Length: 246
Ligand code: URA
Image (tube, rainbow, N blue to C red):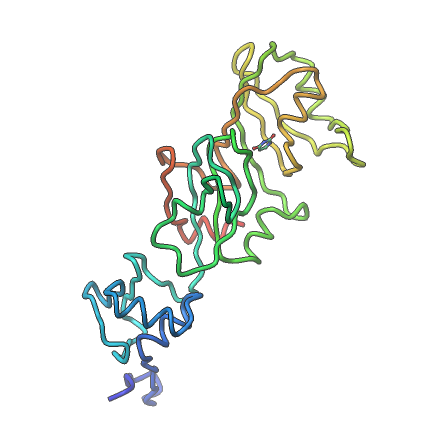
């Protein structure tokens, strides 16, 4: 039987479609049908926890299908948060250097990109997704999204920075001043800075404009997403509420 039947309230029998496993993979991920077949053949696909090597196996809507141990969600989209270590670049591909995407085994069935990059020497929270509309909401200047940074500087941080950052400063090569930012001084040379935008090298340039220099930079959170104990180099999937918070 190639379909599942169930009774709705009105007593009418509706038909929920079943789908061949290779087609299911191709429609729920970026894999082509050929790649999907290869994944099935090499034992990388499980249905309800059991390896299935039959490409024609019928998959029901309620079945849990995994590829490389990762579940394919109904939408097929991937939303991840990673705690980036220093020395790794935020790029999708690089011939010579390690990129954050090189660490995401198990998610290679989707074309991923980074929603808001960090510099190579900056550590902390990076969002990675396959959903272009979602990453636009995270990074677009039209949406307010707080990004919180912990930083250390080479020279003492002056109280006067608080007022200047709150009023907004005009950075070199920019036509508009920075949006109001909140600076909390934690020690003579460390602080927490909250931005609602993400201009190129913004934190370093803001301190540079004050005649200071950032020596260490770490992103703690973006919107409602926190690292929640993720170790350096570790990543996790976002929860539904985290995804929907943007
Ligand atoms: N601002 C910077 O200067 N660098 C980063 O990596 C992020 C924000």
